[in-house]
Length: 224
Image 1 (tube, rainbow, N blue to C red):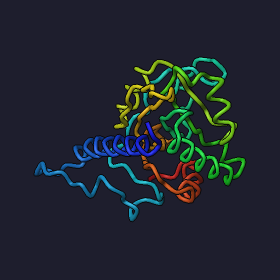
Image 2 (cartoon, rainbow, N blue to C red):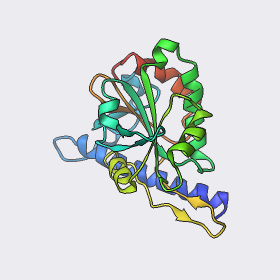
Image 3 (cartoon, rainbow, N blue to C red):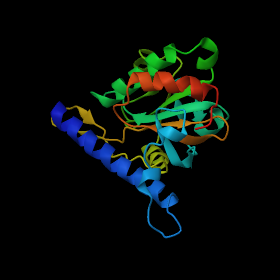
Image 4 (cartoon, rainbow, N blue to C red):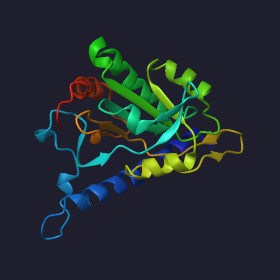
């Protein structure tokens, strides 16, 4: 599969995931007449200090137990409790979206003060656990952030956790040339420390300067 084809496929799935997420949020934003109020699903920049998309529905953090890059069990909900958390699903051999997204977050994290940096978790969950071993994940993440958390394990659990957030993930496909394509939604969700719920969404293509603007707010637990 060519890079162009992979990119197009990823874009299609990201669009589908965005629609699924929008549908869930639209249901929560229906008025008394039952008609969906789509404007409440989209960005509400006039009502939030964040440059990311304010969610009309605040998603619970997934109840997800996987393996971290040191080979130890990791309970996402328990071990990120009460701390600002960015959550992204992807895979290390992704040719475009994953390294770009994580790289931009890494640059923005480096711009934080040491104190604020300690208040933000960046969690990368593999959608290709067969190839993304703890060692592979650690090596890949270290180029973007040595303190980034990498999780790998049961793909069924990963897909279920992502689905609960409106993020679609397909099973990895081995291409004719031996490469692997893991198609997944490319959203980043930001969970606030005040209630451990997702309040802000960042779509694929979000610029680094947006993360640089929003991360200090997340670190301080500023309400969306």
